[in-house]
Image (cartoon, rainbow, N blue to C red; front, side, top):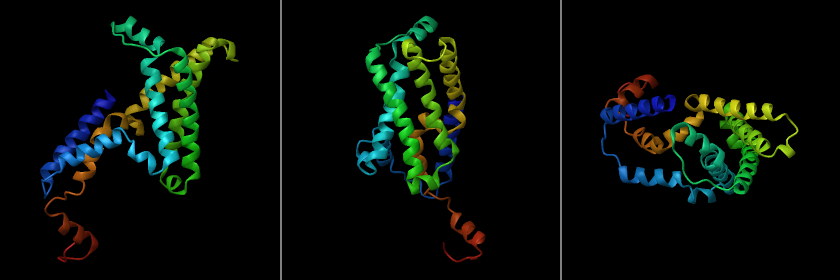
Length: 212
């Protein structure tokens, strides 16, 4: 519901931006092309190769494992009767290790890179590590012979960390999971200023009637 609220508010703001825009001509085809390019960022990997590759791999792993793990699908089936094909436990283990490893790599790369560090906030470091928690605890719960902690405690950590992520979805940068498809349109519309925008900017800058 929180994510739906974010999406509805964003779409409403887009509608208001289009109505207020001085130039209402929007290159929707180009916006759609850029959106698809960022949803499947194959070309972007080459721009900052290691960071981009780490990010893409991380996102693939954290999406595939929770959605296609057999035990998770069984919960959906027992709850509402829906089921779909599952991945094997071996592949799930590999993707889990990848998810945890890339989570730490993302934090490390962000901390090391000067430009990324300057733009980063606390949640940029905390969220990848928090996302890693249900993967680590889930992996240990699936492999009790490797688990140094009591099973009940491990399962509690798995469920509690997953619930915490669900709570944080609409109030953190995790909301980009539903907002990403409209971000390119928002960026495009941001340059379509209202007709009197130049005069107002000039007034704020103390330039009177000079053109901005």
